[in-house]
Image 1 (tube, one colour):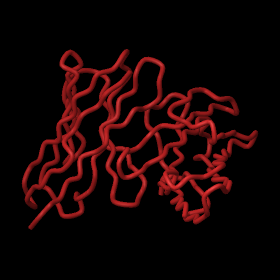
Image 2 (cartoon, helix red, strand yellow; image 1 turned 60 degrees about the vertical axis):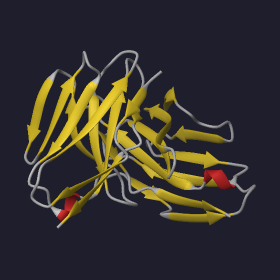
Image 3 (cartoon, helix red, strand yellow; image 1 turned 45 degrees about the horizontal axis):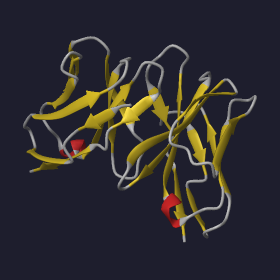
Length: 109
Length: 112
């Protein structure tokens, strides 16, 4: 089976940097995804890692270590609109995405 | 706007009833996925269809069923509804080769 852990809530200050961690256990591995979800809205795709290392996309970066079953999402220059839930999801060998319960990020002034 | 459409946006019904949720994927996407999101469980995968055929099944109850039609739209049927079925139901679609899933706006189901 698959198990995904991420912190339930985090708070950070506008303009700062925040790192949201995700650890996972999966049989087979075919990619790790990060999605952003504002309350009551659809998840939107942020990043995809299938190889070890850092993927950078503007203010957002995502890191993956397959040997450690670990990923993080790094958000720089935080803005109030970044207040949302961030969902870590893993795709196993032949299974669709399994999502973690999400990390609710609050950005404060 | 992801290009995935879902109807209805909101649905309120009573226990024991049956409802049908509808999803139209992005143009050209052959895969459709259904998810249930409740406050305490997070986003739970229910079922996937690819070009009209069931591809994968997750934690879908026997009271729930789905299908994908030749025009690629999909319907999720929920029957003998219980209070615990109240949730947001999302549909997502993906390209054949790409990893990303595009989510629709969801249907909020309230069972009273």
